[in-house]
Image (cartoon, rainbow, N blue to C red; front, side, top):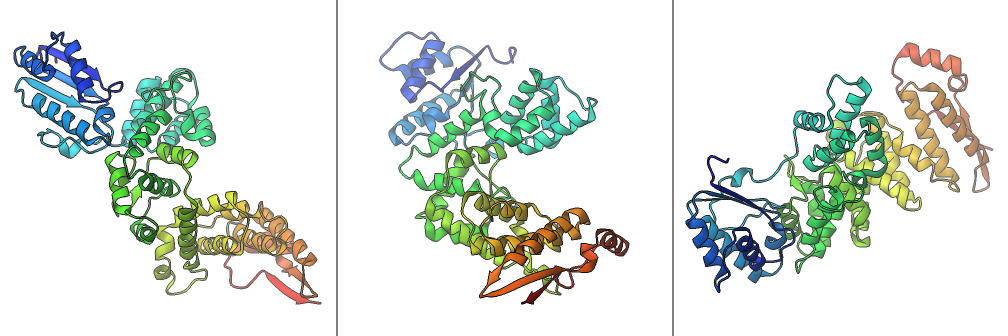
Length: 453
């Protein structure tokens, strides 16, 4: 670099507000005498001083502003600078919208993408001073940690700096799962965007909300934050009636690199950004209600019994399975139980019984069903059935016996309903032997028989 350029200059635009401020800062850096035409003075200086490298860092603070006049002045400045044959101009800016009228050398690759898994691991180890030969559990923690932050370069760098200060990767991983983006700062006393992921994200959102149409892009971002697998086109289309200009909002988010577009057109967010938005910018009541109905409908479409059409009927729920689980868990934790929520959780769990059995949603729902005996009994029944599918017989018996006790106390329309467990399930040793010897259990008949007294 020293041999190629006779002069190299770095200017941070973060404290500047417009093109006039950039010009004044450049005049000071190059020690150019004061004149009536600052821009011409800078141009004349650069043209007469050989090859120069000029880096304008954080240009978004003066470029991504709602003032069109200020943007025009900055474009004029950049065009004049770019026209100097002996000047190499490099800018760094959040977002993907470059000033037009300039022949940028790397338009197709201007966006800083997330690291690959390998590059993230290498970067972490280089900064932290760790290696793949370290303790196996700590290396595994690093691998999981990199995946958790979606290989975001700034997040990887800050985590590595924390590890360099003595924090074990396993401790960092536990802290991430508890605190998420709030922990991603290399200096507890610093608030700058280079040392604090939350501060960096907040800058992008400030730029997003600075324009005249600032509300809808942020509202769309809040929706995307609830969908770790991305906002798919089918759901995006259903949200259109709830926005004035959803396409414009999508463009604004892409322009600031707050979202990216996946291989199937879905709008995705990096994990640190997603968690920041979840905490700082909740959905509006209208959008929350719309999302609630959309995902309840998807859950209702899930096939809950095996059939020849199972795969065909599974298309919608399979595509949204990860989002369904996350959004339903959010509803379980934030609203009072309702019949529609219980039905949605039951439908998704019944579908999962035949694909990827999981009790996560049901266990979360069970903890919220005190005072709702019928729902609680049904939830415990479903939990028991899935535990049987997973061959966890102790947990299955406990859940089914809890359901039995609840059913024995339920009175509906004057009739007392009792529920009896099949004898082979009540008898734990006998049940275990039968199910283990026969392999994976199949839910061919209900585990409960109802008797009205």
